[in-house]
Length: 590
Picture (tube, rainbow, N blue to C red):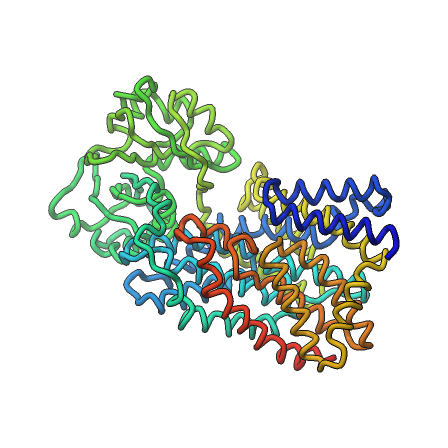
């Protein structure tokens, strides 16, 4: 080996060791390795930051912004509120949620897809009286599987396409991954829904960390143009049930109605008194196109500010609002803030929100102009709760958001426009249509992932230019000498899967993809089946909670132990390899 190869291999071994250790965050580890590579002369100075402008890095960042736009527009609520039912059997629920998660993750970042569906799954488990740990792991695996189907579903596919463009002159297209990835995803989903979930250990304490989601007593108003005008209050029960909202009563002309309220015919201006979590409240509001309690004020806020924030604050003894009402302290006109709900343990609230006397210990749900939450909290003298990423859904723009995204995907799929440009145009359209507020544009980008990609791409290129990937490929080819093609692909997949189970799948892809290309050249065959094998294997991180971010996300809410993952993950990985190898040889022949 040359000196450059020794240095680069040492850097990669150090990076992998640091990632396994987990003491320092992966982006710092990767960026430090890049800087060290430049100082040691194995990465050209002119190429040091080339990874940050690489198409793969740009696509990952843009997909995260587009995903946020689809969430804020209510596109996800549109799907989940019509398809999720807590009365279904666990197997049926897992199959439906897995199907929804798989489809969503094919067209948006799979981490974002899980983040959207996880609260829905937890709430459904609560209503059904079962542990969320029985369904969260299948949901996580389903979103990982769904990401294999399209170019934008998961970062490994994006990286593979970019590496193919650099090596062969053309990238993989949007649905080139679908034949193999789709077969692997369907086979995996069938296993998870029918057998896999039965292998998960059941624990009584699983999901205890989700119990701190506050239930609020809140008001929503029937606007003038609402479709529910003329219906009886009892007719809203089905929608309330699917959104996990309890309808407590009705306020008309400032007076609370009891007893016969369920048979009351709804009129414009009626206030519905509800009990729900913030997310469930927003879903219910979106489903029925209801307005906030102070409708005029919230409309004015939307007009005056670049969107709205939902914040949660705890009332202290010395708070300005303690012992007073929101109306009496002028919360609306002084701070342009609407009181959406009150969480008060063990006490029934019978007045309108703005006329309810606030007590120390109450948790308030506030609707504030964008970027003023801290000022409002300080003015009130309250303590902010940890940010849970609450947002106001712009349900009037759901079809606009879906239409813009669908048009961009279609244009990119037919080769009419380069995918990063198409996604960039979607982001611009979302900002102009105020689907994604300009002030939030960069907050949705996961910068550590961008830094990881931007740092690892130049290191991977340097290793390839120094002949390092050729050495690895030669070793695997020698190991599989005389074996049939399917066995060689299987070895490549197993090696890549093993790395991906213990390392970041992005780093694994950057190293494994060039190795696959070199193996193909050594065997004088097409590189495409080897790239496809790496793409599927790098995404198949099912054995540990550290192999994929989705697995890490569910660790606490599901109440899982480290050793729980392999019980369902090992047979799932075997199934993925078993169905993928024949599919690769059929759709991407050597």
